[in-house]
Image (cartoon, rainbow, N blue to C red; front, side, top):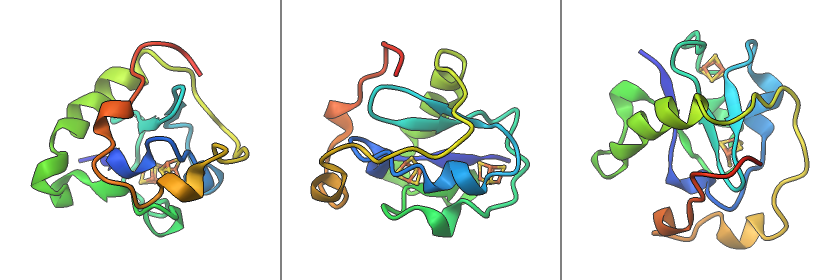
Length: 111
Ligand code: SF4
Ligand code: F3S
């Protein structure tokens, strides 16, 4: 089992999740965070902290977000660990409820 960051995080990166996570399992890309499934201890404390409601247990992942299970595993190997919270992205509030926004995910460059 692991927890998974989904589409709602894209272009927001509120990072409240990072400040409560007891281990270093969040990794940061240009406009999205992911959870390393090998580090996540399944505590669930990050879920209610996300203003965008972006985090789910893999067993509760909405069907239209299934792709993000693999994306979290893949991108957590490419992106650096983020271990403390930072300011959200400049237009985070405007993008929080926008959908769909999968197309805006920047999956290659580092943060
Ligand atoms: Fe971190 Fe717990 Fe969230 Fe996993 S479930 S990412 S260990 S806060
Ligand atoms: Fe993203 Fe929510 Fe964390 S927007 S950075 S998953 S608090």
